Amino acid sequence: MTASPPPPAAPDSDLQLVERTVAGDQRAYELLVIKYQRRIERLIARMVRDTDLVQDIAQETFIRAYRALHQFRGEAQFYTWLYRIAVNTAKKALVDLKRNPVVSESTLRSGDDDDETSRLGHELTSDETPETVLAAQEIAAAVNAAMEALPEDLRQAVTLREIEGLSYDEIATVMGCPIGTVRSRIFRAREAISLRVKPLLENQSGKRW
Image 1 (cartoon, one colour):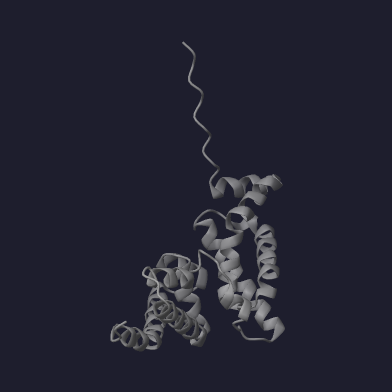
Image 2 (cartoon, rainbow, N blue to C red; image 1 turned 60 degrees about the vertical axis):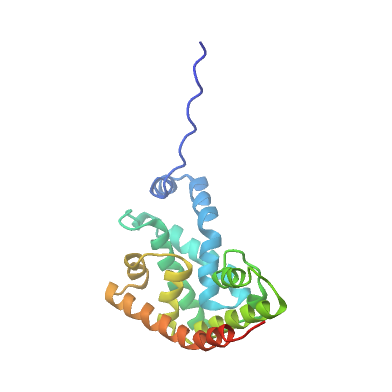
């Protein structure tokens, strides 16, 4: 009777990859970059809204994280720790360039299947007609405009919660503030977005096609 093959090895945890990197295994850090690069770039794009800067800031984020890796103790999730570095790096880049976040046309036209606005549009147009497509585009534009109009702290909090899916505890860690402040910021952000979008939804529900 032949022996059954051994089960496939489980992938290393983030903490194990960090420990391997600190011990000198460069490939381990490459795996962390591959795992989180797209997510970090999406986060930065939500803050900076300038596609020409996103990759540079993401690269700087991973360089800073690598240099500080010996400080990571696994007390928080690795991606929470990494997000905080990304947020701080993006803020520093904006200050250094003395510019405010702007929405570029290429960002608005980008077709990221994982983007929250893209998903909203698809959900609203399951029975697509020219009218419903236009309605979905108007609502998506209103959401984008509402997000852009938010103060930076509110926009960051609601982005981490609604788009990146972080818990309130994780957001508090990333933003360096109490969890009560996080809840307040997210509530205020949702209220502001709702005020922009609700009239459109009411107008669409009152129409007959």
